[in-house]
Length: 453
Image (tube, rainbow, N blue to C red; front, side, top):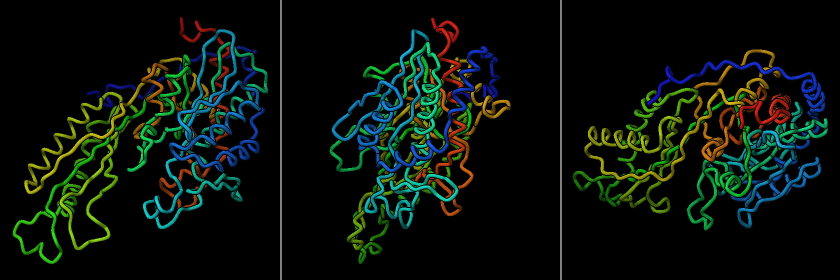
């Protein structure tokens, strides 16, 4: 397995100066970036609720908007409630570029489903009721991620179109549902949403490009992402009765034994991260959920408790190897705690992905970042966030990720993951400018200039 010492992270940026014409197009397009318009767009799309598996209304709204700004756009249904939005600016035979972000949010904003798991209540940044704060931030569920990314990409394309940039390569603007790392809830009859289901459908049903840029958080160009492996561990015990359990010697309480297992696994997780850190990625693991027993009759202890785990995996550690490492950890825990009885299974797996940082689109994104910041590009290391970039890469499109800088105005009480719902428009405008650079740098050249046959 690769380590950080043999995977490059300090990647030099190759200088590919723009022509005088390209510089003129760039300045014209960048001058059209309109933060007021972006704020209004961001608020409007945040106001349309689009939880995973129910993105149709947001995607259809995006199709209408893309048509309004001059794109040839269409809605791509997955089923009656879910679908993707795709728009195109046609080229004349040059390299094609896909600009992509997911459209679904990670919360349903349903108190019955989300409280108390998100906290004592759904905060304003967790609700699909967008508003503009006094400082100009857009607040609402997904306002920053993913809908701030949708905003930045759309504004970049609008400005390129309005500036009349003569594109040689086709420019595709696309947003998909099913992008969140979730699976359908128990009892949900629709079983095919989440874990990049929308973008996989998109790419296998007619949308193709030479290169792709995905927008997700992180103000740098990133050429690799982690994948994920999900495990379910069932800790076995005995069904008991509160009035009698301590009467029996060696009674095995599944909930108590699950707590013992959780503490042992939590001790192992940092070792897993250290062993699998590689390149830009430092894949973490999390014990995310525990289920066991009957909440409505605590007099009876159950014979089983379930523990759910997410292990991230770097691009050089395939899911089969992660599974083997997890199996070894389980064996070690059982050796140290022979009183435990358990069985386990992998319930989902999504491999990490990698694009050669010398690839044209990675280099172009780094040049765009440097154009905006006026300094040398610095890669972000230690990342552990899974994105649809893996699907794009695994289905054959060299892909780079770029996203917004840290939001400086998140209220202290909202620090943490939350609803990803504080969108700072000046940050998004930076992303739009970097994307405009990459569009002009890529789509106004010939295929040969960008390394394509």
